Length: 460
Image (cartoon, rainbow, N blue to C red; front, side, top):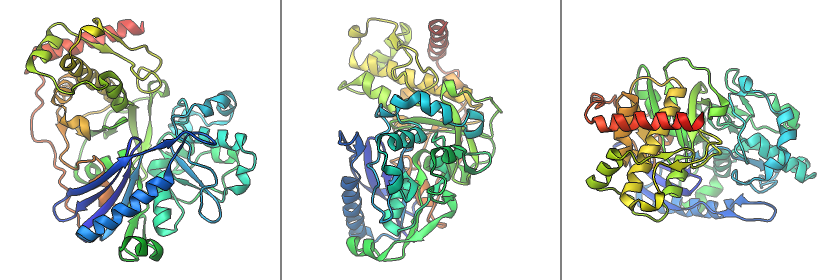
């Protein structure tokens, strides 16, 4: 096995990459925006367009490299409702649509508590159980059309193999549908009346099937090559580290969402009000986690501005403690409900100063997330934030622990997903070998202390 195709459907972009199993690197990638259709009947993902993209990309990659296996990772908070023929019984709702909030009080009355699911109550459709509840109530014929419920990565593996599954990392991503400590569906599936429609739950690290002949003919791939059932994208980022590292560590997966995982850290009582939760890793084990919509916040702050800062920009931001306070997105993260604000008149900032302050903001909110889940040991940052030196330096100073950017994959998920189908794939993960640079610049320490103090004052 040499080349693994990885289908990676993020909330903002869809990608199909190729991972070289010998070198342990991603060598090619095709990408396109993940489009949300406005309706009818409600905002939903354009899965037909995505499927055409996936088929075309697989064919192209196979022609260029010869694909030996396929793996899948997708964003969370999404569920596909399938009919008997395998078509969608209803369009897959966009989790940022506010429709489910219309029935929020009624849903609250039936959802399990945090102690059962480790899943906080979230707005919009961020709890997949709330999506299903709303869809069943607005479409009285839907229950009769549903033959099976599959989690989102498993929608794509179903398209490739014909096998219908749910999977534990996706079920564990604040769906309300899973009991991570007991490794079973939560009581909510019975209350929704879908217990007999939930496709069997599988462990990501232990579930593959063969590519069916119809899709092989469409793409030119060999029928029967291994196809992973699939995994939640942030857990794909975590998987290589679970295989390679010992002791306590944390992984911060960055993108539209910033999701922090603490492995082997302190025992902490998780707080749903601070957007901490129990995720589930590729082996089916619960993992304390925290999240906020950091990539989206960064885009909102920067707009079309230039995303870089000069030494002069950074020096001014540090010296004058130009600070951005949470929460730019008040619907997620450890500062839910807080109103964002600047320490200065925002209109006076250059793009470079705004970039520096926004990078420090993201690092300090990430530090808060790590504290809440009891993180210890080194912090490995996956995805685009790993290339932001200001973010990385402030995170290391603020946590007083090593913060290292991952060298795993361009996408942050490709290698982890590929490891699900390749026992021979080279895993480049190694323990960070540098000491924490916590005292190199007192201005960073002073900035972090000031920011934390100001945020506490604003909360009070």
